[in-house]
Image 1 (cartoon, rainbow, N blue to C red):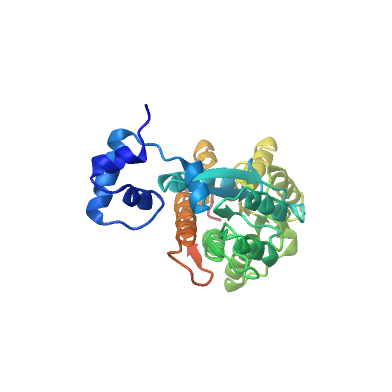
Image 2 (cartoon, rainbow, N blue to C red):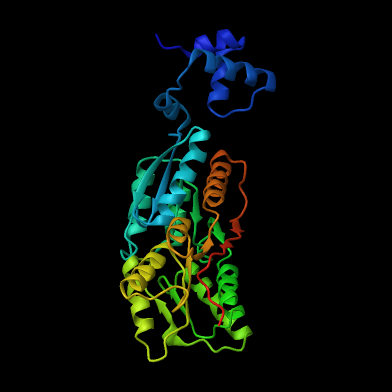
Amino acid sequence: MSSTIKDVAKMAGVSISTVSKFINGGNVLEENRLQIENAIETLNYQVNTVARGMKTRKTMSVGVLIPSLADYYGVSILSCIDQELYNSGYSTIICDYSQTDPTGASDKINFLINKQIDGIIMQPINVHQEDIDRAAKADVPIVFVDIEDPSVACDSVTIDNVDIAYRITQHFIDNGHKRIGFIGGQEGVNTTDDRVRGYKDALEKAGIKPSAELIHLENVSEESGYLAMMRFMNLKNPPTAVFASGNDLTCGAVMFANEKHIKIPEDLSFVGFENQTIAHVYNPTLTIGIQPIRKIGQTAARMLLERMSGEYEGGPRNIRLKAVIDFGASVKKI
């Protein structure tokens, strides 16, 4: 027979109301908290989240919204977010949406609000202030990951994209490269624009004029990375180095190089982004930019928990973390 809240209260030596307050996130005396936690563990007491939701108007569920479930970044960060939320008693509802659908994100936000979730963590593309306002009216805070949108008042966790792109480009320049190709995502997206800015800043500081023919901005896909590398290599004066600024872009670019027997770094120096697996499988080991995925996910989850609990009620926050370069053997000195 399952244990009840009455059993927990009896073993802990406190009132049922004190146990209920603790379960629903209220503050109790430290001594009582320890006794209740011990009783819950000993009795294997399972909280009835449905009943608690009816009482507190909280479902203890969070929506996680990413553009594609096939995207390396989205899937990687998802597990980190889920674990952090699970440790705080929350379950996750996972949704994806099309980046090319202008109402895709709005439709899924509405879907999650109708599911009465308590909060949302998402990669925002085509998100507008009215979406955030609609969620706020339903008491559903939203935290962005990967992309900071200054036009929308919302908490966000990003990396310093200008800095990492600058340092990778500078690494090429330090090794004598002047014609450096850049492969990025969709223009107009904050993440892409910042990486382009870092790339251009490094070139201009070194007295190298950025060339439009060496910048490929489309979408973050293997196909885009493949086509970008094809375009670069078919130029009359191809680049001596290429930076692919996303995981799928990196995979696509490397696929083209392998198919055409372009040797890295003998024929072309190359730096990828995000995925350490491909970096260490490829021979020689690729130099690659690495995002702190786990820290991004944990930070976003904690920011949302602070919003949902009312611990933080101030203005929008942006936490910008540092990415690192994992140096391999894919950049040749010329």
